[in-house]
Image 1 (cartoon, rainbow, N blue to C red):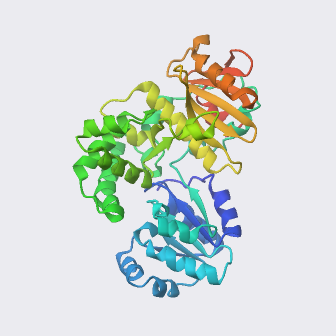
Image 2: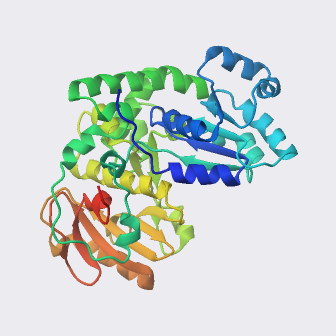
Image 3: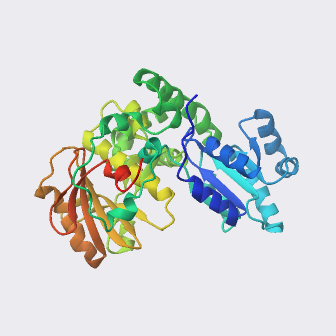
Length: 402
């Protein structure tokens, strides 16, 4: 039995239960939502009910109000996406009695994408997203990269980290502990369950072969600009169908679109987003071939996304591409200003690798605080004012204690 690893999101989850009548913990299947909410439920004396139980599911679907009457509060409802009608019944109860911590919900599909549900619970519910393990969680470290990178001077030397193996391993709790062959078998079962059960449950789509083919295409293009027309051609399906399936995979927290940064926020909507698979282990399993630099970029993007999920300050992650072709893989913007992160798969970085960051610095003007080129090496070096080459492992080891 694997040992329990603390989740950094737990602190935000506990605080949300002190201030909101309903807390919804969302995230992909098998990221550890049940383990986390059961631990919090035990601490706080919450009753736990899972809608993976088919008898309970049938009751909740047939009579949502009666089902809620059957259980004392406060209550944990696991896998609530299987019965969205329950959220409307919960809304009616919360309107009658607006007490904090009444319901803790989990879902492995985004039921809030349903307009009627989202409108019903706006202002009544805190929504938190749990991702696969971060590297800090795997090592028992609390990451503070975001806090330090805006202002800090990184240490010059870093202990080596096998980033390639970390990418292949991913962060799903049940997969990280397995050997390669067993992990491959685990991912095969994971994808099968997603496509044969979860997709059908939330959308009624049963095109398993087509959906699997699209997942493979997305894995191979992770870290690239999203081109729906090209995906449609490769898939042999209309663009409208491909768009529908992309939204479905987003609802299941399998992929993430990263919007473009621009000085004028209205221009961001007209520029192509980047596509990232949420887990590099899953991407490595699915893809017939992976570009080393692109999958490393996805790894970095998701490590930052995980850190932002438990950070109290409002940060925004995007990418940069200007009309002259200058690009920066990741732009992190928050109260302190803005910093850019370029990701390179080579171990030696030179001045030419900072051209995109210099263009971003010019565009962002006085908002710009720092620019980093992350690489799989072991040395951090300065390349001008506010510009650094930096080992990837700084994401989870800078300023932390093991």
